[in-house]
Length: 97
Image 1 (cartoon, rainbow, N blue to C red):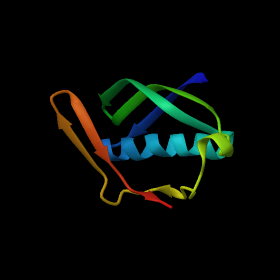
Image 2 (image 1 turned 90 degrees about the vertical axis):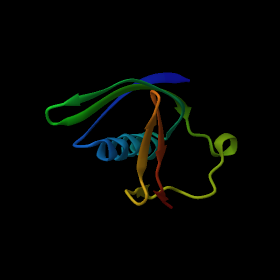
Image 3 (image 1 turned 60 degrees about the vertical axis):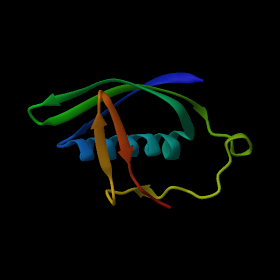
Image 4 (image 1 turned 120 degrees about the horizontal axis):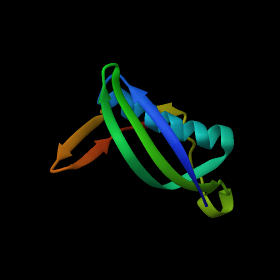
């Protein structure tokens, strides 16, 4: 397994979440990698919106080991939400399969 750095930007928190998920999906599609551990270092509010920096831990995709029943076509905003509670965030989103 290998650690990689990922950054994402968004005008608001929902766009930031969308762009973060899209970056992970692109890594799967273009680099054939899957990730199972995510360490978000920072989410900063800047003049232009939000900026996220994180480390992700993953490995090359192996269908025999990881399985794949359906493919993810894309990320959607449909029913996307972010709930903040006592320093923790719960995110919900639907994927286009």
